[in-house]
Amino acid sequence: MNSLRPPPSIPGALALLAMLWLAGCASTPEPLRDAPAHSPDLAQVQAAPQQYTGSTVRWGGIITAVDNGAAESEVQLVARPLSTAGRPLETDQTSGRFLVRIAGFLDPVVYATGRELTVVGRVDGVEQRNIGTYRYNYPVIRATSHHLWPLRLPPMPDPFYSPFHRPWYPYGPYPWP
Image (cartoon, rainbow, N blue to C red; front, side):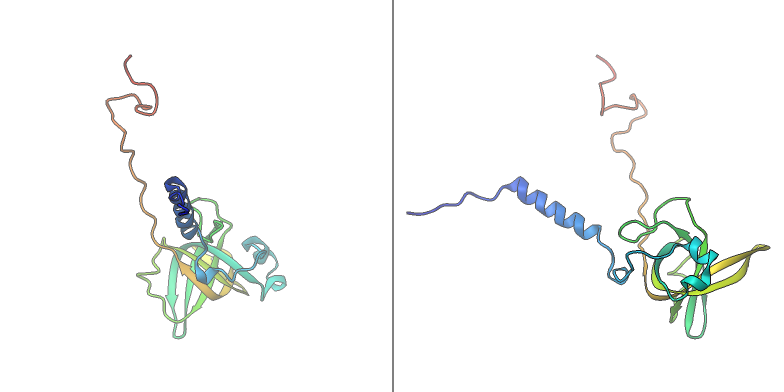
């Protein structure tokens, strides 16, 4: 007797494909996977740099400057909290600034001001520099790996918005009975 199997469930297959696609989008980039589970934050390193020198951290933020030297590049960042995937969050919340030293040349056009960067590396101490006339203690990170994030796309406008209808149309009741 022929045993016929029913065809796989189309909605189930679509749900599985959607989950796999979303899992791929939300994963941490390869260079950032070596990050420690728990590491000191920027304020702890600023307060006691000698205690945390040599510690491995994963920090990220917004690039404010890139300075290329003969053998390495120095990137100045404004720290931002990181998502679970390691990307800096879009927020005004910051714990301060830090410096990252990365071996080799980083093109300042690619690593431009305002781009998001996440680094994994060792704490190499603290350096005092000026921000304007203010003396600031910059924690210094010697990067073992880094990831420059792609530019974020601008938000899409609501395709159902119309200035001639009430703001909840078509999501709520129609404007007239």
